[in-house]
Image (cartoon, rainbow over all chains, first blue to last red; front, side, top):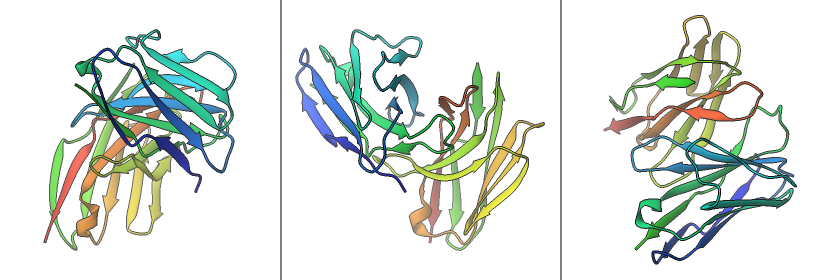
Length: 116
Length: 110
């Protein structure tokens, strides 16, 4: 199956700093990438949908100025958590799809963010 | 909106069969997915149903009834490595996003 690589796997940062998470499709071109957040023992909550070359579509309640998403190429999307706070500590997961009609989206390994 | 319900936890014995149920009430439906997620890892795809009926894939089978808003994942010949969270997800209209249930934590004991 297709491979989606997410980096870093884990990161610890100080409150007030910014953290960038990368999501790459290694063997296919991802027209659409999705960013999720998962708190312990909770489900994956979709944060935003990013399409290559256009602005991301954010879900209700997700601050677009805090969670900056860039999808500059067909193989790379980045999520930047700006001015991170302890409540932003979570598991962030990206997924990528090579076409709108494809039934399956492939997930990255996830990034464990801890803000101290 | 989308509302997806599945049991929080289930336990089973190695070698047994377990059925994990998922019910959904959604404003639109374009297919249902099952994913397996081990702790601290990303979900991995198990199955996809868009038409009513049973889809079998090795030890795993998934069933869908669209009229009842109901699906189940059937795991046979359980192994210890099957201990994980199983997520039911509905694809929203427009073939775009997925809405996930909270997941069912399955614990397989010897």
